[in-house]
Length: 86
Length: 413
Image (cartoon, rainbow over all chains, first blue to last red; front, side):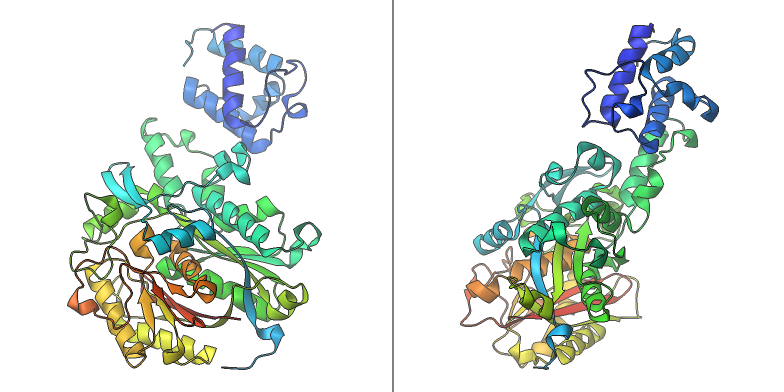
């Protein structure tokens, strides 16, 4: 998956987890929690969806890398490079 | 009648409900007077085609999509009914101290739906519990439906559920009344909810017990007292009441549906599933004694009968013992329209009868084509509504497994 694919997939996951939010104008470099209503349970949902869809296990210490969309893509790129979109 | 000060009288000032085929009391009553069943064909995981009472309320009227996703069906039903009841009550909700409100929700069971769903999806991950949802615990804790109401409305008074099998709708109502009398709250949101059609286990268990209804025409599947009855039609639904002390309701000039004049809960202590007419009769007599109303003064008895062979005849046995000399008492059954709404059943069935105080009609039992002689009841209303000269009091039965009986008596104010 390319960086663009990963970003698209993150948007898909967010659309499922926070269906009331407008995700069309997200700033990739700003923290997600400053732009949309995203609490700790939602955050765990993101981690779970990545686990279910791509069997990616994200250690708790690495959660900090998922604060922004750009950070998430950068963190996931080496883990998802060889994967196909689910 | 027992004279009590208005501070010790509990009245109903708001009703919010969703039932198969109706999403408010007006629609529900119209269905009951028209003899319209809300039972439909339904597919259940592992079970296949069956029949059920299905609700079609607008979940998004009072919840965001995210709240619906995060919570449970029972929670959404509770949130819808509680919001509707408060709107109906005319309470000045924005200015009401939310710490003075209590939430008391009757449930037959809770957590089965979410547990079954989780196990079903876990199978596709070879039962690796890393894929088990972090939502499981908040969804399955027993207080969930009441807690979701608290979250939705910002209520900071007590909230909990009352587990009382199929007697739970009445039990929720009774708990609310008791908490008002104790001064634990000033407004009680009380009643019951059911999400049971979303668990295959309840269908499978009734089927194994030989107590799951079936009919080619789903609207005819729920047929209490009928010689051809085949068992229970499982239903979802909810009914929440706003209860207040008469003194508070009078002060604000509230519309009053009726006064909860008396109640009783007792136990059979005899069997896991079989009812006990001795204890059912005692429960009705205790509720009548506490309300200060004689059996012959009861105008309408809302029966519990679910459509099972033994349950219906046993209740009729108990009813004949209590009301045998009450020639003016009429009997009906609301499950014949909506199926068995489990934790919501008692609360919904009472609500369906309350408009009789103003319209004077006793809605009939439908689908009763050939009466089982064991279910003979003088005054059983069938097929067509019965116009009564006066309706001043209603007795509502609700019984459940493990031998729990609950009875509520409501009188006109």
